[in-house]
Image (cartoon, rainbow, N blue to C red; front, side):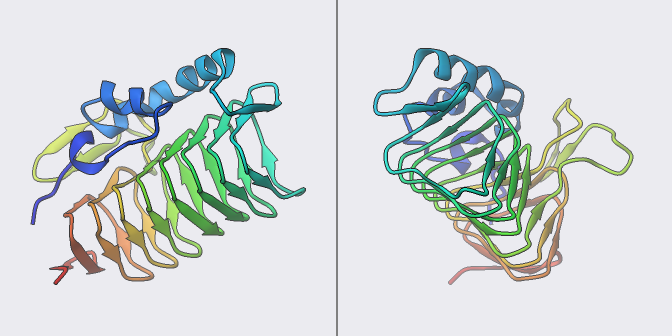
Length: 220
């Protein structure tokens, strides 16, 4: 089973205002340092069909924001996206269309493509979530090592990121079960599902089922 790490292998980005980030970066973690500048430029230039909710925050048509949700700029929410009660966007967050950011979910410096669901008690920091990616209740993308050293992506070879904060990289269709913890720099392949309560580290192949960190089987 292939352990993909290249941006083009993990994601098929159709969202026009996010696509330049994906096209410019060979590896997805390279986008993390560019998110703020990209959002800042878009909020200055504007996006067709989007309106300014407040300074530094653009929202598409049909966006629903609960009264108790908090959005710190800069941020862009794609059309049809829902922020449920207690959702907290902590700056540098950009989403595609029809995402769900749920109760007590916190997101910072991250990209969510179309139809992403992080609906219950999730933390997503310095992460990239692909189309239709889903995180079960309480699943967390840890983004900082205990020793605060550079994050290294451990796949079929080692990839030094050059940065200290890298959360989870969830490819298109990745599904992470309830209560999972993704250690810094974890990559989940396309259409791979993870059982609940699994501690994840490294790169997991596409089209697989992860029963635990040492028990990965091909999806049939």
